[in-house]
Every structure is written in C-alpha cells, then in structure tokens.
Image 1 (cartoon, rainbow, N blue to C red):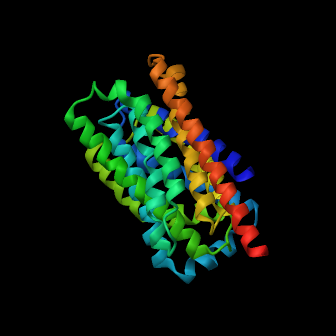
Image 2: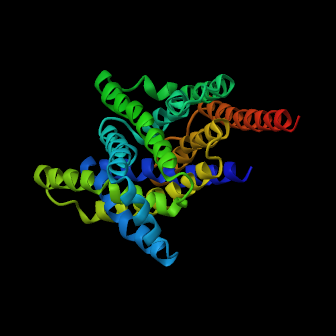
Length: 309
C-alpha cells in the first residue's frame, strides 16, 4: 500500500508538467526551452540534495562503471521522452497530452518481455479499463481538434510512453539496488545533459533566449515534476523492483495525472468544467487503478503461499 500511495503523490506533482507547459505555450514560450530548462534547473537542486545526503561519491563510482549505458538510457528515459511531450504541447491542449500519456500504463506492460518476464495479462486488462475511462473523459474534446493536431499532438506522446518506462527500468537494472531514488534521478539527469545542451543550443539559434515568465515557470516544473514527482515515482518503483505486477500497479497510479491536470487547468487556466461523461470517465480510472492494485496484491499472496508450500 505504501508504494501505491507514493505513486499517487507523484502523479499529483507530475500534473504540474501539463498545466505549466500548456501555460507557457499559451504565453508564446518555445517548446524547446520548456523541455531543456526543466532538466537544466533540476541539476543544481538534485546535486544539493544528494550532496547533503553524502552520496555523490557512490553515485559517481556506479556511473563510471558503465558510462555509455548511463548516457544511452538516460537520453532515452529523460531526454527523448520529455522533448516529445513538450513538442506535442504545441499542437494539443494539456488535457489531451495528459490523457494520451496514460498509454504508458500499457506501454510499460508491453515492455515486460524485454526483461525476460511474461506479460501479466490480467494486469494488462486492468490497464485497458483505465484507458476506457480516459477515452470517456476526452471523447467530447477529441471531436473539436484537427487531423494535424491529432497526429502531431498524439503520436510523439505515444512514442514517449515507451521511452520513459524503458529508460527507467533499464537504469533500475543497471543500478541493481545500489543507488537510492535521489541518486538515480541525479545520475540520469547528469547523463542526459549532453542531449539537453544540444537542444538548448538549437533553441538559442531558433528562437533566442526564453522570456522571464518561461524561466520562472520552468523552475516550477523542475521542482514539482522534475525533482519531487520523479523522486517519488522512482522511490515507489524501487520499492517493488523485480515484481512486474506491482510495478505495473505503480505505473497505473499515473492515470491520476488526468484528473489532477484537469482540476489544475480549471483553477489556473480557466478551462470549462467537464461534463458528467468526463466525471464518469474519471471514476472508471479510479476503479481500474484499485482493481489493478488488488490483483497485484492477490498475485503476491498466491506466489508466497506457493513458495511456503
């Protein structure tokens, strides 16, 4: 239950990504700076956190064992993932990005064979239920967007839903429990810096320096989503490392980003209050998450009884 609650808390702070990125887009900010500034601002916060915990030396030693591996999976799990999400904000509102992002629930499950395990079919069915709820939430809005917005605002996010869990799980495999969540997030942030430096140079050439407003909002994204949410999520996944059923349940909690993002947009961006259909969809999401968690717990009990017998 504790990893599940931590996962829910992380989804709350992750929701700030969609709200603030949409706010920056509406105010004329470039998606390039929305993406790169988050990780550039995350770096000093995370360095300070890990330094105060006296864990920098250990992190450096682990990273130097396989530097190319860190560079590869951090670029995929942090760099490509977030650049694609921010690019999509140009063509779709935050609620649609948040809704499409929930495909990561299924994406994470489909990645299981890459880690020499079987796809948990019942867990996958619970994930499908969550997506039904998301579809109901977004159906009324989806009818009002163009084909271009649908493609450019959806396809990059779908690709990103595979990049984030793939990078996260590969780095868990590499770290093998030797690093805590703070160290792993910092390590992946450092390893993704070459990607972000290249993106920043491109942004400087393409659009010039970001505005003060975009810098301020990017700091808020970095703290809430980049530091707090990511550390909470990584902590939750670390607690169930090696158990694909529980890992799927933790990833399912991220479906709550949708109602959290919607509430945030209502409060801060003055979007219309959703219809009853949307509220029903949110209810289905919650039910799907609970069933996913219940099945995960039930499977663990059965496995323990089998082992004890």
